[in-house]
Length: 85
Image (cartoon, rainbow, N blue to C red; front, side):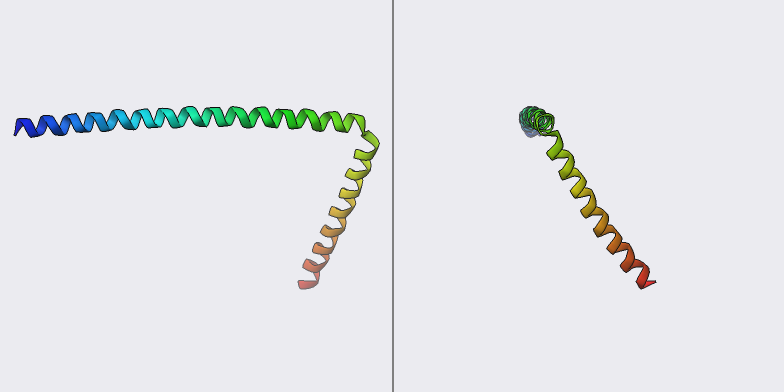
């Protein structure tokens, strides 16, 4: 009986160690992926900022146009909501 108990304990220990290694590996890969995402996002923000600085007038006109479109859509939505009541 003691032999079986020792074997089961050893198996459980090995399983636990293997699981810990897998979790550590997964955690390491997740940290690397997050670091890569942060780096890529930082580069995208830098490129976007540089574009806006170089093309300030165009960017302002596009933002104004988008604002007009959003206002038009929202006014129609609110008008339909009021007509339902």
